[in-house]
Image 1 (cartoon, rainbow, N blue to C red):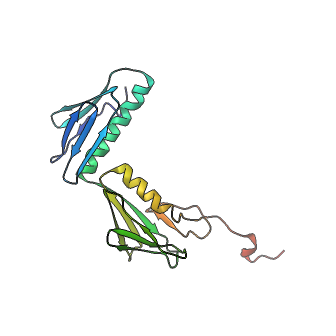
Image 2 (tube, helix red, strand yellow):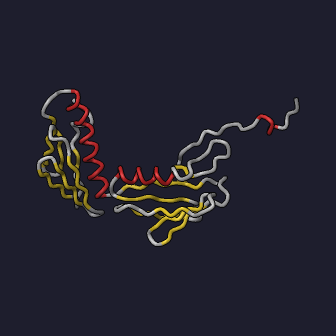
Length: 186
């Protein structure tokens, strides 16, 4: 039995779940999410809890059990609290900056031109010039992570000087660089 799959999902106040076959719709204070799940799993509501049960004991059924429960939990948490990812512009990145133009994010990352990123539906950007951070927020955990990864991919951190965009708290392993830079003579 899946340890994650058999755990019930507690529904916070203000979150409503409707189940129609294998399609689950979750509504909450932050918005609404809808997703279709594999028909081999049974999703039931028991008062203020959601339960995920499987019909068989095959390998695929066991794998989908925990996955389905985790995806449902992410939907419930997303419409109740929301998700956010924070990207930092490293201190070594002289001249790099981010600013907002309406809802769009404009990045100056050392290229000959600024890069404008339009947020997909359900995603909002915010920037802080003082701390040099970019915040990607929304109710869909998967979409928030994907958009943050796409923004980071515009200028990933490089290992020699550490310039670029990185996730908050991400540690970049630094490389030594040229041996001639140490000042030693042969």
